[in-house]
Length: 339
Image (cartoon, rainbow, N blue to C red):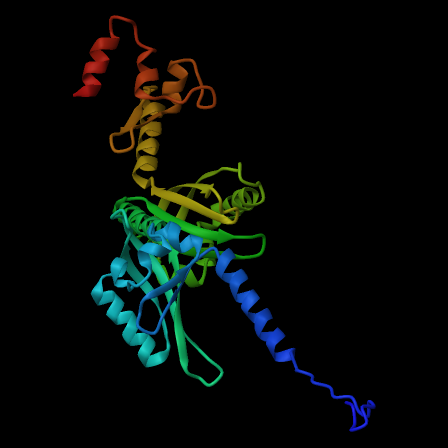
């Protein structure tokens, strides 16, 4: 700065602290990045509830350009009632979160997961509102279809006469997660009991069969996704009665440690086979048994012998069994089966 004689006597410095301004600029840049690249639809709304700005995803969801939305409220796609409900929540708490029904520009109905909040300045005064929308229409439809499918499945499982169950198994843990009513009827064990203690099933097996069944079960558990389990064994009910069980198990697709099983009470079938064996011993007469509910056909050992085959070599069905008769006899036997 020059003095009265024109000589420089001092230097004046004017400095502005730009740290705060840079911080604000960086914050705005980050907000713009989030706004532009968000996978959700984002819109900015003024304090009167009118659209100011939207990102590209928001436009894809609703089909409206920003020119078409400018000056309009979200009631254009939410309806007045839903718009008022969201507005009341924002005024009361400053936030809103929930699912809302929305209509696109072209008339399609969507379900949106909406999050809205109030943006305030440094003094705590509202500046605008931000709404974040995600289209959950297909997700909700899939969930509803899954619920309906599960309901139908459970209705089926509860209606079958055989015991049906699902369990999670590892090398050192067993946990039954579902059994149907037939399990309780056959075993006499309540659902909550088997859910809490899997070993009740093993304890119910007849002592003479228990080790054999456990070995087969352990081999199945350690055999991977392709392993199969089919075992016939006796159980001793809490009423003291002995029942024969045919137990089949498979691994559930996509769940390596989850298995499903179906167990039939075949006591009557075993009794019939024993009776047939007694008959054969007396008269050397072959016998067979057919279950009309399951379409299963059993031959006695004598019947296998009469047809010169074995259980390992041949599994009889109605169709294959007819082939053992002469061509002239087959139509007669087939007609008898149909009746």
